[in-house]
Each structure stands twice: as C-alpha cells, then as structure tokens.
Image 1 (cartoon, rainbow, N blue to C red):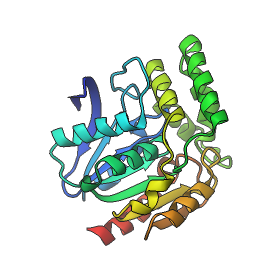
Image 2: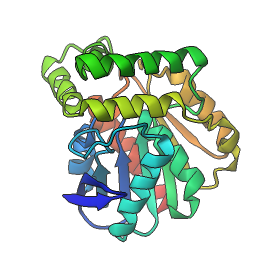
Image 3: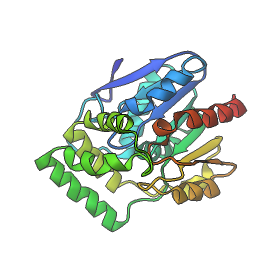
Image 4: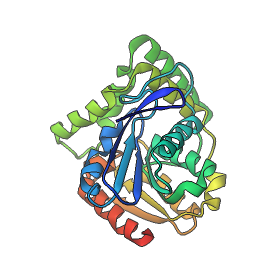
Length: 261
C-alpha cells in the first residue's frame, strides 16, 4: 500500500484487524524483515509495517533523515490510517525511531517494544565513521554498506544460506540516497538515555543473545533504565532476531501483548 506522508511516497503493509501493532525496521533494511510477524499476527491484530523514507520501496529525499523525522513520518502515516493508540515495535535503527516517537507522541502508545537496539548516541568516532561511509555510498552505492553488514545480521552459527539471501534482499531494496540519509541521521541522533526513566507505557525489550552489531548488553542497560520493562533474551540469535528466530520471537511478543490487552 502507498500513502503520501510529509511530502514523500511511503510504502507500507497494513493487514488484519484488532489492536494495532506497528513494526519499524532497522538499517538498511525494509519492511520485509517483519514478514514473519505479519503472517503470524494478522489473524489477531492489525499489523502495520512501513518502509522508512529512502529505504525499501519508500521515496527518498536528499539530506539527513533524522530519527525525529522518521518518527514524524511514522506518526503522520498512523494519523492517515486512523489507528488510534498503538503498540510500537522498533528494531535497531527502528528502535532509535521508536524512542524518538515515544518522546514526541507518548499519548499514541499502548506499549513499546525495543528489539536489538540501544539508547545511547554515537561516540564521536562512530559518528565520523557513519559520515565517512555516507561519502563512500555517494560514489560506490549501497553495496558499501550491504556487503559488510549482511553477514552480521544473523548469528555466526547460522549456516542457512537461503535465510542469508533473504536478509540480503531486504537490504538491497534500499536506495543510496536513503542509506546516506539514514547514516547521517544516526550519526547526529540524540542520547535517549535521560528519557528512559520517563517512559510510562508498558515496555518489552528483546535481544538476540549472539547479536554482534548491537550487543545484548545494550538491551540489559535499557531494561534496567525503563521502569517495569521486561527483558527477553533469545538464544542462538543474531541482530535480526525477529526473522532468524521468528517462532520464539512471536511467542514472546504474543505472551507480552496479552498482558497489555
């Protein structure tokens, strides 16, 4: 499906009926990364998964895509779709977007799920690395990001080549301008740590125990800082835990959703 949101064409999935669950993908992925959640949950919930601007099939614009901008895009889409209050599920960069959304629009949230993400801002060195990578993408294309990142999305012990190809496919749909914009946006994102104690909505934190992109210790820090947060660590799972270990992820999510329904 398609909507015009804040001046861009935004593609999204919207299936099922019931309490709205909104899934926000990570970098440099697309909404396809949530396909196993859409299929499993649409019989019980309204499941919405957008492609963030410039990623997947959504339109790109030149410039920095801040986490605030991406949160505003998501909010504007949900207003168009007349969802009412939602459960927001954000993975990795989508978690940064979800935390920005929670700061800006807390009244919209029935619950918050943070997956394989962290609250802290980039160090000066990490931010400089992202900006340098953005410059390389301008010259060489998105493969500069996809090639080194794709093998790290799954646990090192995972030898499923078909799954690995699917993951690469989710990444390769993203446009260079969108990859650049997201890199620049992540480089300048604010530290969400001071805001964590102010989160009032029920919060679930999920991590892959073998995540090497954002180590699971970051999820432990989140859980200790958010009042009443529940932490679930999924064994033998890497960064893209919801796709790699979909059955376990969906079970954890379903059980928690029952507690807030």
